[in-house]
Length: 500
Image (cartoon, rainbow, N blue to C red):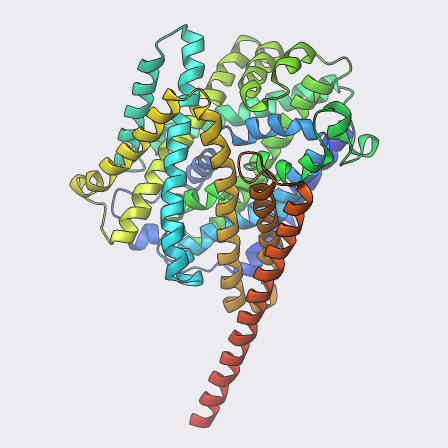
């Protein structure tokens, strides 16, 4: 519990200290925002700041900080380090700067921002990559809540799938303030209330949990899970716990709220603050899972035997058992909202983001219903195809979730490199703010694709060498470009002086 308390304090300090520093690096001002300048009544709508925060939090959270933290519990207290420092220096920085960059570019989506700073070639790759990722999110987040509802109601699986998908269609098409603006704050409050209630129980009962200094970092997985190896820690931990530390999916969601902000000074509480809040939720659930699996005695010992080889299937069970046991009937209702509503609210905004990204690429405004349908219908068909494939294959969900996990972090790599180029051009003394996490996540994604059994399945040592090589190559390319940028600036200055 001491590790949890220290981690909680560091996260809070991170918002007030490093968050303020990152805000200063970007330099928000009083220029007119897209919500006021464009205001199309559909996607560009001025919303109250508190409502934007709640929507942004739920958009980026979903079940990520819950399920990811529970699945990441097998790594022991090392998970705390990634959640805390990943959230402060990578995730929240990534979310804030990508959100504010969207505000500065008329609410532009991620592919447009990538194209502006990394070139049209990368933009086209990102366009396809992002839309497919968002389609994956839509498909995955139809099936998972439908399965939970089916278990609760003892049937009606196909009915739940149809109802959820119909809701997606409606939420994607409607103006942002009609459905999302009304129900999201309620679900976000439920998710936060559930996390706060669990934290109170943790403090009251003060369980005897593994501490970081007692177990070490690398060896913990081998002690509690003999079938795993220390190699699992890197890169698996960084892929497993995504939304609680850093997630590329967030950069696709931030433009939705960038189109609704009254002024730029709200950026830190909305973007940086919502990510820190998500980190707190992840910390709470990591601690709950640590108690459930490794408490002395372990209350989840018997269940752990059934899910230790597949934490992704055990996470919903852990959530329901803990909430009902600790919070009673009301807790069970909150668990329902957290486990069912949260993924649904991530799925609908994923498809909404995909619609806007495609519309941006086609230069098609979205004021009329006909134009929204022209883009949405093919998008819904693709998502439906992924959903049908997932349903017809026994391991379909796990396969899609695995691809989503890697693609999600790969997306953060593109975003971080885009932000690094932006800072190099506009705030040259601070490019390291995103360069360091960009190199880290590049190494993580490279190592994972080499080591993972669902990809190349090579030896960990090969994956580590590939990760280092990739970082060296990209860093070399970046530094060469940076030197060229400096020479261009000097030539420009000399040209101006000659004119004078």
